Figure 1 (spheres, one colour):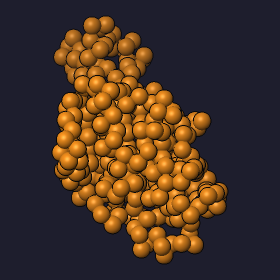
Figure 2 (spheres, one colour; figure 1 turned 135 degrees about the horizontal axis):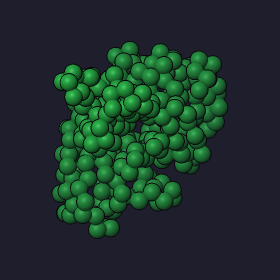
Figure 3 (cartoon, helix red, strand yellow; figure 1 turned 30 degrees about the vertical axis):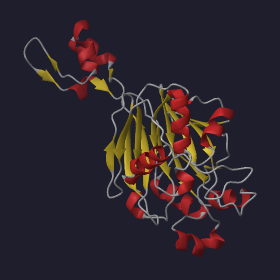
Length: 312
C-alpha cells in the first residue's frame, strides 16, 4: 500500500493567507499520524475532512511555536469530542511539561490517555512500535534540539520461489513458516537456508521529514535512498547568509541534500512568509535535483513502493 501524505501547513514561523505553519498528515496502511502541529492545524484538518479521532500518534520535531502551538487546542478538541482511545505523543522532553502546565492553568482534565515518548536529539534511534512500519528519529542541525523522522514500511512475508517448491517438494503445511523466514529441513535431514528457497517481497515505500535544519552531512546516512524526502527550504540561495544565521536551509541546499542521499523525490516547504510565489525556489532546487516538488497547503501525495509518486 502507498504511504499517504497530506500537507496541512507549508509555511514557516509567520502564517499567511496561503500557508499555515508546519503540519503533515501521514497514513501508512491503516495508521493515521500527524507530524508537527503548528497553529491552525485542526482547522486545516476540518477543511480536508481528516478526523482527529483516527489519529494514533503525533510527532513533534522541536519546540519552536510554528511546529507545536496547535497541539494544546487539538488535544482539547479531541477531549471535547469524547475521545477515549490512547494517543501516542513523541516530542522533546519539555513538551509534556508545557502541555501539563497549559491544562493545569485552564483547569482542564483530558479524559483519554496520552502516552508520551520523549525524543532526544543526540543520535538516530528507532522509536515506537507499529505493526506495518518502523520510525526512526534523528538529530537535525537547528538552533534548539530538533529531530527529523524516517518512516519505512516493514517487509511483508517472503515469496517462495516456484522452482524451490518443485525441487524440494515443499510440504503445504510448512509454506507459511518458510515465508516467515524458516529454513527447510529435507526428509534426509539436510538444512536448506531460507534465502535459497525464497525471495524478498517488493521494494517498500519510505518517507523522511526534515523540518528546521541547516544542511548537515550527519543525517544524510539516515535518509539514504528514501523514496520521498521532505526538506525545509526556508530561503532562496541569495539569502544563504540569513539561512546560516537562523539555522535553516536554502532551496538549493535542500536539493543538494536530496541528491547526496539519492532520494527518489524531494518535497520542499517551510517557506519564509516573504515569498508569495515560491516558483523561484522550486526552479532553484530543480536545477540540482529535477524530481523536486513545492509543498502547497492541501496537497496530497501517494508514495508507492516502486518510487512512483502521485500528487493531487
